[in-house]
Length: 212
Image 1 (spheres, one colour):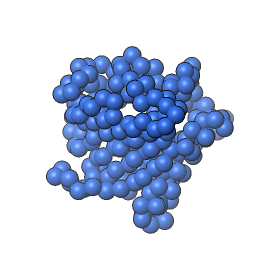
Image 2: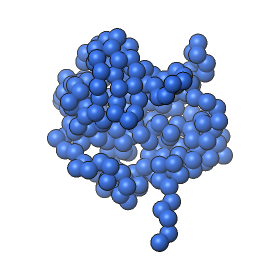
Image 3: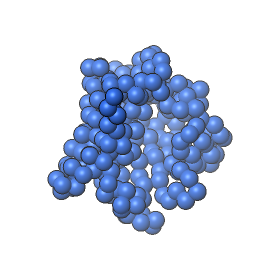
């Protein structure tokens, strides 16, 4: 548990806004450093077989201009692909998904390490943002980056579905929700708004267990 907590705490989180033709977008950014070379991290993020080992099974035409689909999750178009430093995709759910894009940026650091940045930019319905804030997507990305970090170390969680129901996972999701609350507060959000968003996110990811 302490190792997973350290991995979650290692990430830097930023919350922001951006004006787009589609409307005012919200941004969440995660940055952390992996003890792996940039080519290895790039391969882990773009090779479909490896993506399925740390994230979700993916299908489609995985090249610039092609379309992808994550099993039971988002799909979209590959908008930019500049190995081994930049990948940008649309990140869409449902029939009327609106605007949502994810960009991954990699940069090599000394001693064979890689700085990894993931930025998710989306036009979010105000009522949804007011209820959950940045943690709605941020907690999910925290868990994904945890999986990537384990994969790059040659490790994995044996049964991810069962693990997500464990108390260990629940504590990590509570921690992630709180950390996204701190990032939201640092962006200038009022305290009562942050409190509401953290409570909404935590309640979604870590619902109260029914009493026996």
